Image 1 (cartoon, rainbow, N blue to C red):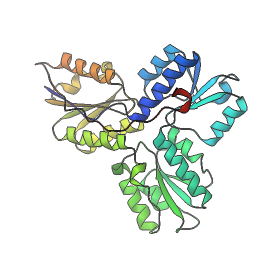
Image 2 (image 1 turned 30 degrees about the vertical axis):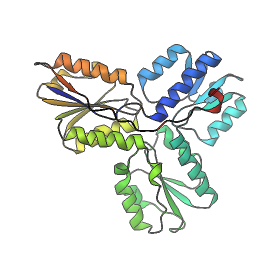
Image 3 (image 1 turned 180 degrees about the horizontal axis):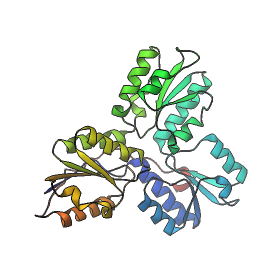
Length: 309
C-alpha cells in the first residue's frame, strides 16, 4: 500500500499565530489565561493548552475582573468586546487577520448603507462574529437556494462577503446566482478568500487523482476540514474525517492500494504522523510513504503588540 501525504496540509499562519499567542501569554503573564471559545477547532491543541493553564469560556462574564482574556482565531462580535469591557478584563486579540479584514469590510459596507450577503455556515463561530459587525444589514446565505430567495431593499446596493474557511470552489455556485439576480452586486476581493483553505483543497484534488481512499485529520467542528472530506467525496473517492489515529477502521483500508492523508488548517502535524504510523500497522503487506516537497505558503502573521517585546 502507498500512503500519499498532501502538501500543504495542517496548520495555517492564522492558527500558528493564535496558538503562539496563548502559549506566550501563559509564559509571560502566568496561568490562568482565559480564552473565548476554543482557540482553534482541535481537541489535541485545546487539551494541550488547558494542561498549561488556559481556561476556555464562551461568556466574558465568566472571566474574573482584571484577568486576561484572549479572543480566538475565529473572531468575535462587537457585543462580545463590549461584554469584556464591562467585565473590566484585559484582552489580547488572536483573531486571524484574514477574519479581521472581513470584519472591517462589513463595517465599511454598513456605514455606506450597503446590504451584505454573507456566504457561510449557520452556527459557525466565525460567522456569528462577522454578522455581529453589521447585524441590521447582513443576510446569511448558505446555499444556492438561499441566494435565489434573498430579498434586499435595494438590488443595486448589495455586497458579498464570505466565511474565510470557504474557498473559491465552495462559493462559486452561490456567487453565480447572486450575480445573475443582482447584476450590480459587489463581489469579494480575491484576497478575502483564505489562502490556506484554497491551497489545502487544491492538494486534496491532487490526492484524489491517485488515491482510492482519503483520510482528513481534523475536528468535526472544523469547517475547512469538513470541506476537504466533501471535496474528496465529490471527486468519487471514499473519504473519512478522523480526529486521531485510533478512529481509523481496519475495514477502510482492506481494499485500498493508495491512501491519501491530509489535515485541516487547525490540525497539528503530530496527529498526521500518528495516522501514518497507524496505516503502516494496518497495511497487510507493508506501506510506502510518499511525501512531496513541502510547500512554503509564504504567509506569516505578526503577533499582537502586547506580545512582541
